[in-house]
Length: 209
Image 1 (cartoon, rainbow, N blue to C red):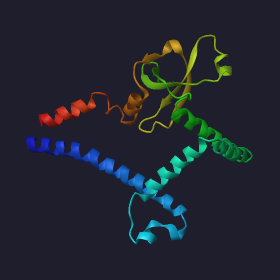
Image 2: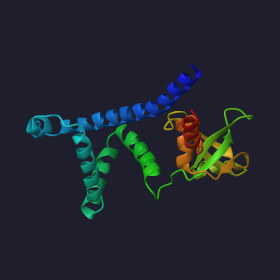
Image 3: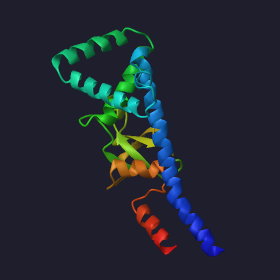
Image 4: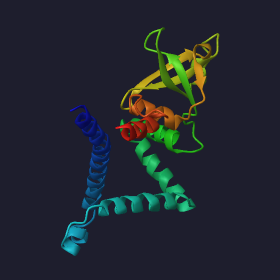
């Protein structure tokens, strides 16, 4: 029985990650396939080909995003973007949402933006505990209120790192880590399971069983 239990656990370690991966891929492809509904009815691949081919929405989405990026690289695209943003700025409430989302996306996706570049340890949620945090930008007017050097940090929640807390803490109360943002995010999302050495432990466990 103990050996059968080990076989069962080993099988779970193989199938659970595969099952979740395929489920996420299927959900992503199904969601992107909804973009085909934007096409005229007569252009739908299901009608033209007579069969449903999963993944065509992914191709359409990638094509639209790629063409948009290509368009924005020239003068005409820049003028069009400024005009579109000018229209959005005149719409109450929509303007606030668009600016906030754009600022976050520019921060996370732009290589020359003020993205998270340092991983810190800060004392949270109480003085005896430490949490992973990312150093981010702070308004100069806020930092001018402090007599000591303070830094702005974002503490993401687990397992959804898009939610979290934005704090100002003394730099002396932080520990700067020699860790990349990708590794820190992976650790947060996996609740510490997917640490650097986790894959080695996983393979060792399977080989030992």
